[in-house]
Length: 337
Image (cartoon, rainbow, N blue to C red; front, side):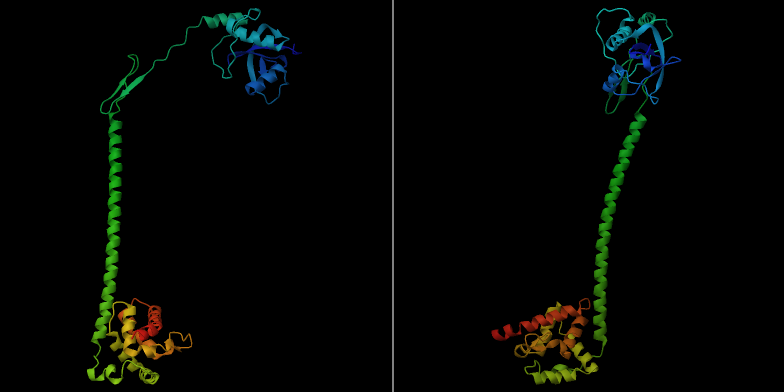
């Protein structure tokens, strides 16, 4: 029966009629059927592809007079049997292509395709689904449905919870904005406190300096030496004097009283007290350009230590750069005078 023939069978669970190669049929009302795509499935059906063990087995129902030696004829008979319940008729009818998705229907056992189709035609029509329409308004929530449907649930509680949730979110955003403002103000307050602490520290240092024994006018350094120095010999005498640490500390205290709003301003005041532009022109800070090195002198230490007592937050490098800058401009100032 399975030599170059096709059989029209009904798949019981899928409730569909199909023309399959007779070699796909198995004993016990079973049939192999592959899970191919539409094109691949049609090729397998037409070429009578050999069934494989991994193909799924389905329960089938065999019709009478259901074997054909031509695939196209068997396929038409299967489609015709689905519509007209007639395997023997040759009349031309409209063929509806089968869908891959099987529609599940309930059948009982019949002796032929004709009996089955007659039973299907006598089944009552499918019930029509009733369309539910909902009309939602901004303040009043109402649902219009068919009289036979159950009443719509009251959604007012859900809406109230949604509104409360929105209000909570607004409150969170408001609190977050307030927290950002508080943190910003806190940063400003901390900056002000740091500035005040720095001012108090400077004031404390000035008070300590002022509490030290004041130098008598008769003992001031400015009466002991002829400032500003114009010759190297006078500078060397002063260098010898401040080489004594005790004398250096007294001179540092006196020079720190010269004041200045910035480090360079203080350096300029101190250097003008010590040097004329003519003598200063003989020095560079590190002794470059065949000039004398200023950084080797005790006067260099005097100016830096005095400056740091006035500007404790500054650095030695700032004062070194300020001294070097003042020395570089000595020739320019001398030429102007």
